Amino acid sequence: MKLSIITINLNNVIGLRKTIESVSSQTSDNYEHIIIDGGSTDGSVKVIENFLQDKNYAKHVSYWCSEKDKGIYDAMNNGIDKASGDYCFFLNSGDTFCDTNVVKRVNEYCFDEDIVYFNILKVCNGQSTLHKYSSSIINEKFFYQNNICHQSVLIKTELQKRKKYSTNYKLVSDYAFLIDVLLIEKCTYRYIDDVLCNYDAEFGVSSREIDLMQNERFMVLRDYLIYKIKNNNGITYLYYDYEYAYGGLVNKFRKILNFISRITFRRNSKVYNQLELQLK
Image (cartoon, rainbow, N blue to C red; front, side, top):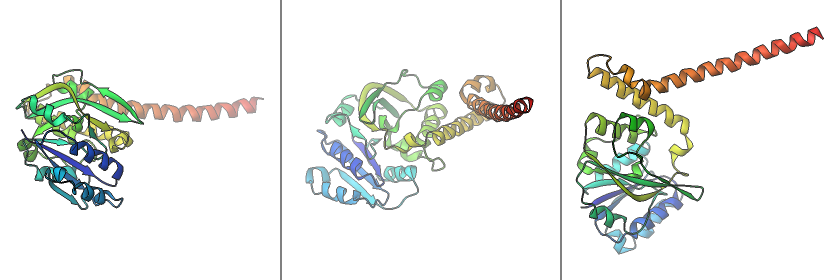
């Protein structure tokens, strides 16, 4: 089995160097490396060119480019277009394999499911935290409580080429993709209790724009609920989906009420203080 390792990068020269070093050190030859750089100006291109001088690594680089794109998911889609392996795996700049035998171990598992996901190590401020998925059963509740990091999932290339990432979202198109293929299309999947990747949670955009990510997740769940109601000819799922989708709406409404209460309390406090001064 051949693995298409796709790396996207934009002005993260230090992270890109770590990622390429991690890929080039793999003991197995059953992979290709695709690098999509978004037109970096920090020396990233020079790093790529330096690594390509190593013939043992260069033979695995099936494609690389450095040109402007329309964002993270546009860059990922560009990498998918160039993939020729059996499965796609995104190892973006800053992310690294856990060890030199990851590609070898992946081949030894001998799977054929559409989606195969693993545990992941999240690295932030020099500290590594193991994230293990608590359930190997993927359903609506799973996606309400979790997401599968794209650095921990292998996706069949034929599926990935057919269902690319939406560019309508900035941070959660991988989340939307998995809900689409696993809950709507009912693609096959498998969970393997192993770790492939150290995920750079410090440099990642989603780690720095939490509010935007939560808003986009709500939009994905809302759209999924609309699809589900439409395809079941009624509102039979409204009560059931309250916990998963409308819970987000209730939280938003609660925040609005809390905001109004705080404003009202401050105004009442000012009035009370003025009255107290007059009485004195």
